[in-house]
Image 1 (cartoon, rainbow, N blue to C red):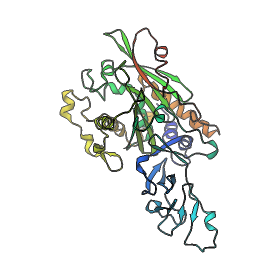
Image 2 (image 1 turned 60 degrees about the vertical axis):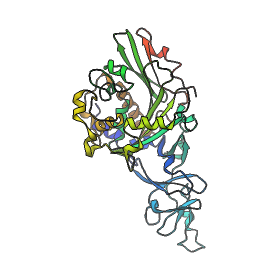
Image 3 (image 1 turned 90 degrees about the vertical axis):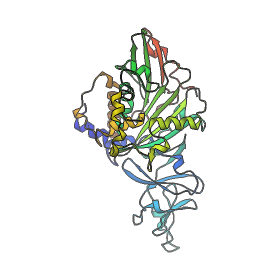
Image 4 (image 1 turned 135 degrees about the vertical axis):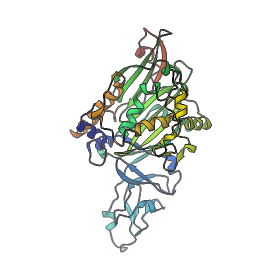
Length: 421
C-alpha cells in the first residue's frame, strides 16, 4: 500500500505539483498527428497535465502547442484563425507563431513595439511515429527524443490509436502493467482463453521477477505449465514514466506482434491512453487487420464516441451481459478486452487511495513502478534529473517464450529482448 502522502504525491500532476514537475521532464504524447493533419487545418483543444492548451499546424507544417487563452484578454485561441504562419485570436486579431511569439498586433498603433513584449506560453513539439510529442519541462533539461523500436519503422509498419479514460493516469497504468489480471478479466471461465491468452489462462498464478534498468525495468510473468513440465514466460518492458511494451502470441509462435500503451495524464482524474502495435520482423500491418484488432479490443472507430470516448462506458455499465458472464464464455461478461480494463479501472473511482489495498506477490511490477516514480519525483524536488529521460531506449523490446523448466529466462531470451530494427 501507499501512504496518503505518497499517493497524493504520485497521482496529482497539475502545474507546480511534484508529480507534474517530474512528468514534464519527459517527452510526452500530446496528440495523434491525424488530429491536425494539414497546414492551416483547424486548431484543436489539448488538455495535458492539468493545462488547457491549443494545438495547430501552421502554413509551413510546423506544429504549435500553446496556452489556450490569449495573453491579451483571455479569449480562447481554439476559436482562432489558423493562417499565414500563425494562429490569430478572433477577439482583437493578435497573432502568435508556434513558439508563442506575438507576430502581429493590429489593434495597436502601427508604430507600437508592444507585440515584442508579449509572448504566449508554448511548448516544443516533435512529430514521430504518428504522434505529436511535447516537452513541457525546463528548456535546459530537455532530453533526447524517445527512440523505441516501433517509432523507427516506416508508416504502415506500425499503427497508433488513442482513447479517453475517466480515471487517474496511475491506476490506468497500473492496470496495464498487472500481468496476472489477464488470466481472469480477459479469459473465459474454466481456464480457457478467449483469444491468444491460452497459456495465461492455463496457469493463472504467475511468479514475477523484476529487473531494474536505466530506463525503468524489465519484468517477467513466469507461469508453470505443469502438464508439460515447462514455463511460459512473458517478459515485458516498462519505460518511464508510463510506457509498457509487451509481446503478443502464444509462446514460440513465429514472429508475433508487439504492442503496448502510454498513459498520458490529462489532469488528476482523466487520462489519454495511446495504443500502438508493430510486428517483430518489422513488416507491414495491413490497416484492415489493425482495425479488426482494435474493434475486438472495443476501441475501433465504430466503438468510439466523439472525443475518443468508448461507447461502452460507465453510464451504460459497459454493456455487461450477465447471461454471457454466467455461461462462462466471457469471464467478465463485458465485450472487448480494452473495455474490460476500463470497467475495472474506472470502477475504482477517479483517484484510488492505495492506503486501502493489500498487495501480493503478483503485484511486484506495480510496486516497482511506484518505487521508481516516487524516487524520480524526489530527485526532481532535490534539483536532479528523474530516472530515465536521458537513458538509451533504442534496444528495448519485449518477448515471450515457452522454456524448459530448468532454463532461466534472462539467458534464454536475451537475443529476443534486443531490438532488431
